[in-house]
Length: 257
Ligand SMILES: [Fe+2]
Image (cartoon, rainbow, N blue to C red; front, side, top):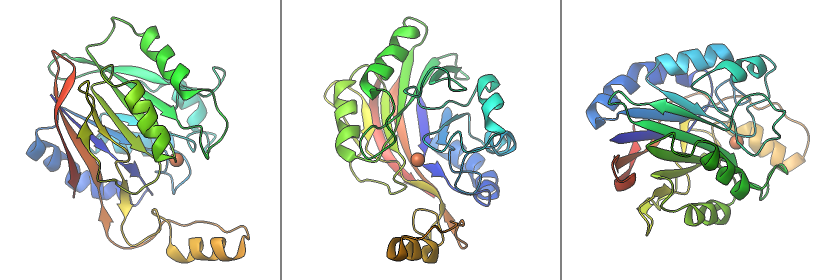
């Protein structure tokens, strides 16, 4: 079974790009499931129900997120009901939405998708190790294979989580930095891994944002409104080829289109 994970989708203007390219790309790759991080779709901050709907109709089956998921008020109720959208599992239980959900592939494989946020250089949330452990436990015997999106800043924390859970997830991928890393690998116990999948958004940018906005912000420390950059769009992803019987990854490769 092949799972394509797409890096953080930035800006509403990236949605028509995906609508045009993603269906043919998933056919070409033979991807059974496509998972995308969608926390930056609504012009960097958050995900509205409408943006989620467009993303899901563009060839994405499941949406993970991160620290921007609650930025939009209209996302709150929607997160409770959306079967294909999750938020990090280490937010307090009172927050809307779920930290993991199960999606069934066309062949009937039950895939548990878990989302967790990092604790290094990020908002102080619950311990990511314990939170992921809790999600695996909560769904025990309810899934065939599991996939984890670690939405985190520090590469060391992503690697630590991946090594800790090696063998218990078929695939683990990092998101949040918007820069793809070149360390795709199969860990010793069979988990396919990459530290960061990268970004699906405007190429001539700083992490999807208009460069001048970021340069000014860093130079002056004054509040600055960030706008999504103009220009061409590129998708960054990783394709995991998984044996659904053993729930281990056989091959992992980076995809850019
Ligand atoms: Fe993020």
